[in-house]
Length: 510
Image (tube, rainbow, N blue to C red; front, side):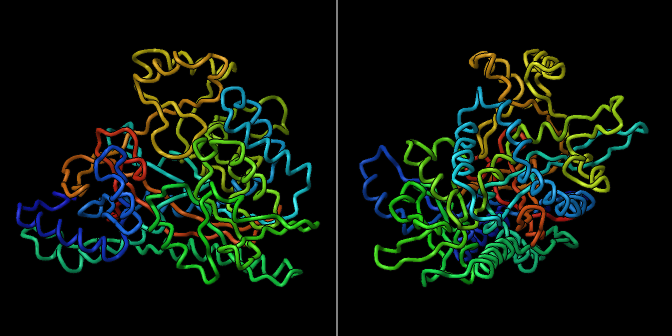
């Protein structure tokens, strides 16, 4: 694509800035502003915070993205859903994963303790809801004949609190609005834009609605209480509008409950069904059909044992969880590493790769194409080799070191890897994975952040949303749910919008 995005002058840039600022606030493409903690007016601003909004960082143009890579990512979502549904069902496999990382990862070990406690009580709800997001970068490599070849490579698979579905749909609508109204007026307009349909917030809301209806069909009421959905949230949540857009797409009573207050507002019925009961304003009791977690993925969500008791209470209840503890553990980085490890056939004809344990052979090749090289840091032969790479001051520049953690800002890149490992006891290294860095092709764009435009090279990360409902081996839903594009400056290593690194974007297929 020649000269993309279009070259614009100062007047055109200022015009686009103002249109985007107004559109984002008018359409809820926004976040709450941060509350200052060291200011003479901090208390006043803290009082105002619940009434304020600020535009989310966003690109002025949709970023050029290879159509073949976008379509490949979309084509694999059903297979990825089946893969992670099956992994979530395999307690033995997940137990082995936890055993490998628990020594250096207390958080994952504590999650497993919750599962073990509920297993002892006896699980009462057989259905699970998955709202997943598979994140990819485009990898560019040179073929033998010197031509560039583009292939999507998976960064990670998110099984809990996969965010920005609400804002992503609105970013797509913003860029479609600009393509219809503002872009044609530029001095050097782009001839056309290929902007795919994206209804991520509606589709994610539909999956919660489906789970609510599954509960209504399969769980006869014994108490006469109306039924509801609760969204468990983090304290001080700034990304509230993203969550609200999904909430408003659900045709059922939905209540937001801070995770820190879950034990105050919910109880579990003292009967064999163990219904989860939500006490709204201390006056009206609802039976909770679905718990949608937008928290619980980071140790900071569990500052005390009371928080772990709240997770245990939810897990042992009859509500359909999104996700269960087992599904959350299925999304840890160690699982991704084990799946991506190349399979070397042995003399045993019955031996299979770990991936084939969970998917049909017809899906295996497509999934493997998206895997990048990921290594353990344990005492296995491949782990010992990976340790050499991680500690080598030159070789480490091709890798990123990842803990078993969701959310941006947790990774260590390139020459920061040896220094970090030097601070970690060697017996805890097995709780990390070493991933080969993906090399994306050059892309340019303009990012509007905090009222200022940043222009230059960018890196675009594609997230494919998918949803599923299952009970054991029975799949009741396996659907696509739109996409997310997050874009960051090409000098930034992390890309999380909520963590302050990236911006919202949409794709212009080329």
